[in-house]
Image 1 (tube, rainbow, N blue to C red):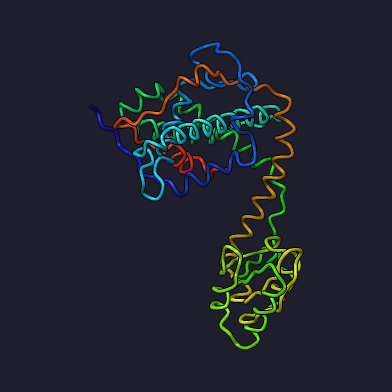
Image 2 (image 1 turned 30 degrees about the vertical axis):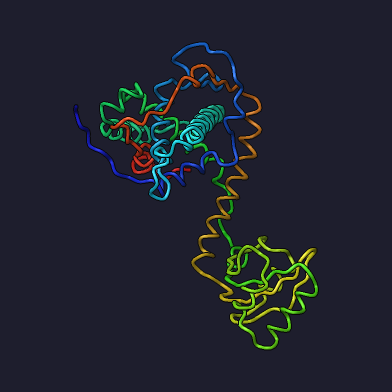
Length: 332
């Protein structure tokens, strides 16, 4: 058996980033099921299709990216195999449908790849294909041109996303993104609220009192704008470190807040990125959602139902998205 160089990029970065491409968009349930037309086609969107070989590239990578959670091999647990396989197949269909739909939109907007982008795609395809074992090539049936086509499609989808989100305001103030660390006590009835209020007024330890009376799931919390009831947020964001609030009455509860850190700089900076990403998603979604209503999407169900994930040795590739990211840029 011929061994090929294994590329060791791993799951945390790739898995999280690739999901962002289709978050909030098409799912496998959105695809119109039609009778089988050709054994080679799995999915067709607006005239462009993905073959069985191309689809299996996604499947084997997703299988290895998501088959292990917290060091536990889910494939080793019989009760988890069937739901995990269904999840991975749905994930693959959703991803492929989204990419083909985005590429169709890109073409309608006259967006295309430049020579340097095509060169990067070609390089990435070569690197990834050469990392595959003979078993992986046999399982997928893919050749280097299939990998190149998949990367080219992904690159065009990425370019479309960047084009539609280029004018998004990336300025986010500290106040808008501010993340605060606190402890809370949440109770439902007025009598208990009075008991808590007295205990705090008498100098009781907030954490100890929370351990006795708190009815929320957590005592320690981190939150930003829009994460707590409006009245609670307003009072909490006006507090200084070490301060304890009075009882804050909401529609169905009483809140007591202890301010641990009124401004966590690291979490606030991370939240700024999250806010910008959300703005981008909304801007992209407005255009994309309107467009996909106009185009056809077909899943050849008999072909897809016949595809199974394989646990055989030698099918360990999980670097498809990592290689793309290294040679072609950030995943969107």
